[in-house]
Each structure stands twice: as C-alpha cells, then as structure tokens.
Image (cartoon, rainbow, N blue to C red; front, side):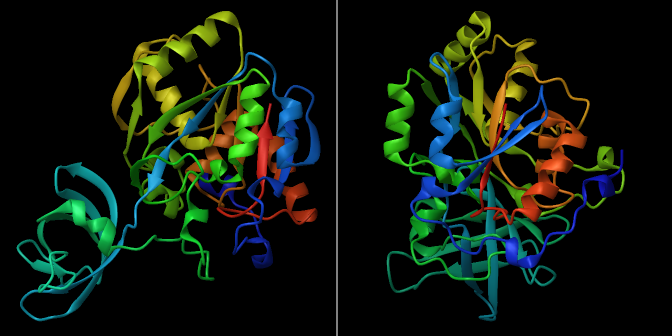
Length: 343
C-alpha cells in the first residue's frame, strides 16, 4: 500500500466554492457495500435509507474564528497565525506565518492596546513547519479578534460564516468544520427523529490533518495529528445498547467515525465507555471497524487520511469506482460539496 494509491485527478471546477442552498438540497451518492450498488439521490432523501432504531452519531464541535493577526511588540512586524489546538488554559498550538522570525520569547500583540480587547501572546516553544506553542494573556477574547479560516482550496469569500458551521454546532474548538454535517437542516433532523432514529452528539475538535495531505509514500510512516474528543456517559451507553441489540450505528463524518472507533479500541470491544482525551487513530485499509455500521461523508482530497479512512470502510476498489463516477457526473467536491452515504 502506497500513498500514491490514493491519488486521483480532479477538475478544478468541481471544487465547490460556495455552499448550496438550502443545505439539504446537495446531491447524495449512496453506496451499498455488500452489492456494490451506487445510486444518486438528493440529500433530504436520506430519510429513505434510515430505519427505526438506528442511532446516528454527530460531531457537535464548533469552528473557532481561528485565523488571527498580530504585531511583534518590539518591531511592529505583522505575524499571522492559525489556532490548531488547545493544550491547556491559555496555551495553544498554532501555525505561524512567517515562522522563521517568530522564536521563543517573542511577544505578540493582538487587538487595540487602548481597548479591553487587547491580548498579548508569548511564544514558548518552536516546532517544525511553522508550528509554535503560544501562551495568551486571555484566550476568552480570541473569538472577538479572529476570523474563520476557510480551507485553502476555497478562494471565494463566504458571505455568511454560519454556513461553515453545522446547525447543531455547540462545543468550540475546531479549526475546520466537520463537513459531512453541513448538509443537515433543523427540519431534516426533526424528521429523522420522528422516524424513530436516535440522534447522539459527540465532540471531536477538527485539527491540522484536515489541511495537509500525507507526504510520505508509505502511509504507515505518516504521523497523524492529535485531536481532542469527548464521548459522554449517556452517549456511550446508547451506542453500546444499539450494538448489543444489533441496531445500526450511522456515523456522520469521518471525525465521528474516528472518535467512536478510538473509544471502542480503548474499551476493548464495541461496548464503549465514556471518554475524554486525545484521538490519533489512523484508519487504513485492513482496519476492522467495531462500531460504525454506516457513514455519511463528503468527497475528500487526494492522498488524505480521510480518503484512506473511507477506502478502509468501503473497500478500495469500490471507493475508486465511486469517485470516478462522481467526477463523470460532476458532483461537487470537498467542504462545500456533495455527500456520500455508505451502507
């Protein structure tokens, strides 16, 4: 298995630049793994593929306004950085630009020093590729000073930044949206519940790996970035009960899949326990899924860990076929693109 096995050529015009309205009118490719059948639907037709007793697992992480601008306290030089993950109170791992001039001990100023919104930031540790650990004087003010960081393949400004949030986003902490959830509307969620489907919410704060492809030709040499996840006692019990009773667990997004599979691994089986901690599970073809029975996901970047995960879940040959069909049928790709239901 090589990283190049997960490469494909995508016409630039198929990279969705804006979200479609309403949210649930995007296209939905439905893949049945057992038969290999590939069907084409609209996202709101998802209801026709759900069953009474199903459990759906959503990631309720909310996207931070993670892109910040600052000035060096001593020179006034402009420094841009992206919040990646919270390490401890007021301490964050960040991606800094330009990085080479931002060394430990440097103090940065954010906002207007003459206002209460002013925040200072001290660089306390240097990592590779522009990574810096920064201590802020008051992290509670960062939301007022930052702006949402759209993925680098989106080149058009977003008029309504709430369109880069799921309608159920709650727990602040992600750099990027868990994009499979962007297709749901409050009305669709109500219909799903009325159909006898249990909707559960977990939290996994989406981090750096969303933005970077695997560079190593041997994917086993790739170091996946850690993300922080939480599964409550109530949710763990509901998922465990569903697995015991043979009811399907439908995960919304690769983030939900990685979290529940991490918890199952930590618990030793599919009867999962409450969890709070770091998640660094790298799922490649050959992995045996313990919890996820079905998955809703978007179309992912070439050579990405996300494409490797859906290949593991679907089967490499079938997912390759599905992507070829999606390109031929002009599906919209990536964060604001169309969706896929894998049964």
